[in-house]
Length: 470
Image 1 (tube, rainbow, N blue to C red):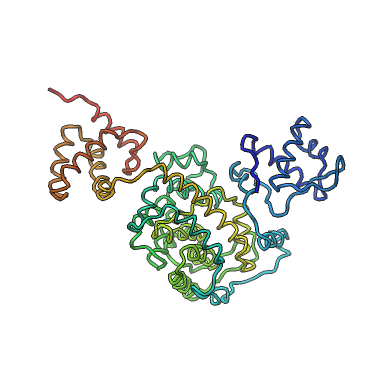
Image 2 (image 1 turned 180 degrees about the vertical axis):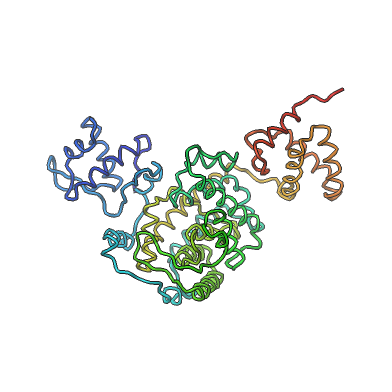
């Protein structure tokens, strides 16, 4: 599908689409010019209209001067306040006919849609490795994309190599899908330097930092995680930390009834049934062999059950990455997924048990994420195997030197003692050299990877920069 040129501001296209939206029978060029509320040269307006038609965001009806423009039914209008790059993405997400039908049904007001409860047969009817939400062709396509740079290495190796970028991308995009208003830059500053954005609710910062902690949990415990109670309960416990009214609800299955905003779906309310179906979902997911089917199954079934008081969709989005982390496949960071489209896709699951629209989102989002990380992986080069082997020791020693505010002479003595006690003889000389080089190259743009605070780093820098006394 043709893309709208980036050099033309997305806000200009969004303004046109919003004017057309107000004319269900179609808007003429004159209607659009008047509705924009500011003068736009005719040639410029026609250029923008042509681009929107090429991108299949508008459909022309009629001929010549009588032409009117209507919205393409399968393309959502950008949501006010949504990032321009996300609004632009809405124009290129390929929506299937079945997905478009879900969107059409959801255009009815909530009052006009049929109330529904939890449908047990939606889960019972799924047979691992026999039933599939993704077609054979779709799974093969994802395998080609996702394994482009995979290697036969220990679980979590690839995710660790791109961890600094994954932390920001997935934390921001998953939080954004929940309505978080932090920008990508705000998120980067929060994660790397601990700086909260001014004028924002502290809950938003907490949500993002919870994502960071949860991603680190999955990546650092790659050998141990899976579709089991340990992983999913603790994943919820981290993501819900300090966000729920009932502090004990973090990491605990739901004991109270809940509702879904702007939906006719009423989740289960009986705790015993919630626990039974939760265990069934985990057992089913664990038995699925294809990592892409496994990932998508969890994105469908976990939020449908609503096993926790809140934070269910966040758990499903991060849990969807478990197969990718364990098998060194490209992760899924939901980059540029329009929040309005994702919400519609989830309503399709809740109210219709129809996976079509969420499948459209999943396929598009995974390909977009894989492209990003393929480029990032190429720029990384081959990781140093010695550094990778001793990454935990390196992190600990550097952090200790900084937190203890050791100068160059004291740090050398500390490093010699530490290495003698903790590193095998054959590796000691190379390890000391690696730590010394790392301390010399430490600066304000790279100290966050050692989980140091800006104040700790600044205090150490003063000591480190001092000339030794004679």
